[in-house]
Length: 294
Image 1 (cartoon, rainbow, N blue to C red):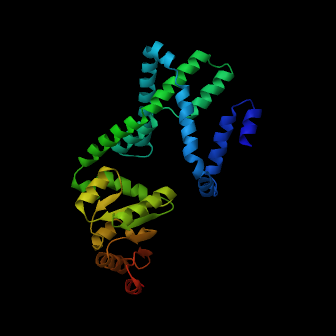
Image 2: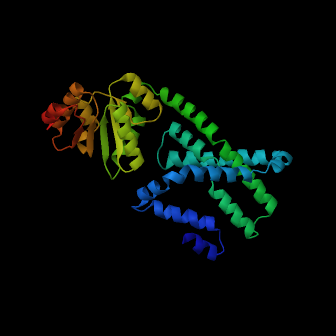
Image 3: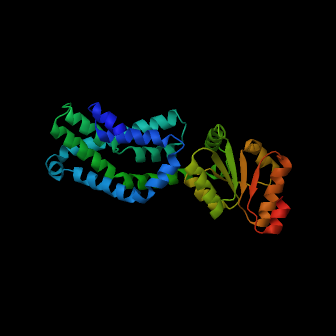
């Protein structure tokens, strides 16, 4: 329907499909739509990248590389600068996170092909210029994996230099991150233990995208590695009253405890004793453990 509407308005039917996808993604049926198209996702992605590859004009690249290269560097530099400034000033993101976001968003996007195609059909830009812009965009997209890898290593190095106070959540950067998490209108979730189950819970929360989370971990190596990746994992003992009060766990929407039985029992008892109103979800190992928790 959206494709027919945009085509009737003299625009690209691809643009209509894009708008229709955006509209569906904002509805309650997005999960069902994702499940329906999952079998075809790989095929459609492969078809998309094949068409992108065919859009690359090798003859133009060989004959006008002195023009393509400055355009490519200008595109990457300009978009990266805009993303860094916006993320630092508007969202108060750390420099490491802003650097990663800039590297991922600096290349051109698939929507550029739609815009250039429409502009060419409407005679707004000549065909040689459209081919030049499309070639530059394709090259920038091809650099995305390289830029992502370099920025991830650079961001991890920056975060690793913040010191132990960042790992324990006691520095200014951690205070800013925690305040942003707690401002979420959907509330935040506390996860005790960044083991395999704890990581699975965090991935589910990330996929849902509604509730933010904080993770308490008592293994220094695990916490330090997670903090170097920009994750909200802190090296603290969640059985301590001062820690629970400092992180304002009483405001948590839910507490998920994924530790082993002895540790989980201590953590659940400490949180229940200080904040009896907070909902706690604990992994029970057997029926006797379930009865004790209840």
